[in-house]
Length: 587
Ligand code: ARG
Image 1: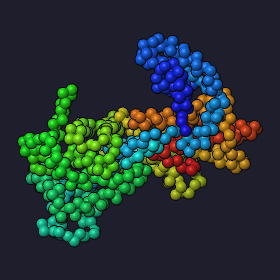
Image 2: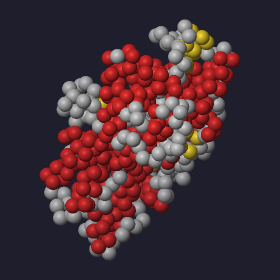
Image 3: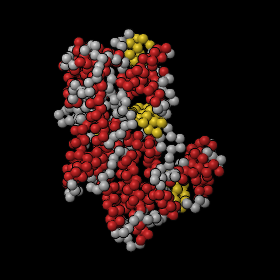
């Protein structure tokens, strides 16, 4: 089925067509001036430009023709050629019944689905996941959910940072500490011991030590470089150690992402494209795209129109090591081989903007991206209340699992303040607190445009009042409990009647969800859905206080109101699901 605006666009489009104009000018959108009409069509202005005619004259003709349509109760002109439209209550009532009966709640299915790879992980082996990876996960997972719902085939790839110098640092660190381990025997070929020589905690302690030592001591750094090169070359003992590091880190990552309700289809990393690097580099050399420069192999990517200097991408360093950009290029090759995507979207910190300009340009120059487009959605920084990138109280980077703990703790505190669920079991309260905590975190993030910076404020995010996740959960749970009460008194949602005065705002809003989802999809902006959900919750809240839901004596009217409430709940739940937020049964 189609949305209200799509149905009206069809109607207006055919009127434009009758006037010999492009039907695309008939696009109808939700009104920006609800005092003038419920919908508007601005196409007469563009149509006039294209046809070199007077916009007002075109608008008048279109409006005259629209007035004869029985579903339009009001058609008026404003300004140089805007057309304002309002539909009849009968039409609204019927439209609502169609939405309520549609499992997709009025959202059309995309006619030509595309294959879309989304890259929103990037956690690094041995480094605990921190808030830097949080926004990627929250925003990327929501975009994946939105794309999937709209109808694309989505592949979320975690793309772990499991290759490169950081691995060489770790391997050499273990070699320094435990030279006795069989892996470090130059002749090690196996067998492959099952148990890891280190625990996750040890691994996490090893990385900062190794990285600090490498910074301080060039000889130590050389050793790490040497280990990296040997690892990339396939030295069996180093590969075995790498595998241990990888396995224990992945378990922790899966746990962290799981707690956050963030999902990936693919658990690939930089390492698994290592074998694709040599042939790719050869090919790029042959084509003259990669050139020698002081012992290194580089890809110049500067373009004449550049306003700033874009340095070349370093493909292979003079010591023979592949770089971050190299693995990103080989990953593009891998994705073309495996998924052949129409689009790849990288949800990565905006500070990596230059890196992606280099990678994308090199990929296009080398022609390795197949038919697919490449796009970097660079998100802004999560700042502390001091306006600087968010840190722990001690000034360190906050670990993701600590942050989630902190959010559930705050949620539990606020639940207690509101006396919510006082009589529930401890397990249920914990579950609710976790859901509320995650909702606070995700909603606060997703209610901003991804590219904006935002300030992390745990107290504000966790409040039950205002534009917050907990407010929305509470709103949804309230409708659930209303419907349960109705059921208990033998009532259930019925057919939706043409709206009464005072009910139209809610009904129109319920019809607008597909537009919010469509903009979120087109603009890669989950905040469109967050805004919609918040407005819907607020509109319903006023409606709920103005209308009797359970005690209305007219049965048909009462059941119509309950049906609207049920539709509000379904839309809220869908919006929250698209934001990656789950609603508890009760609070
Ligand atoms: N591992 C990288 C980091 O922590 C992020 C990877 C982002 N994705 C990519 N395809 N480069 O900075």
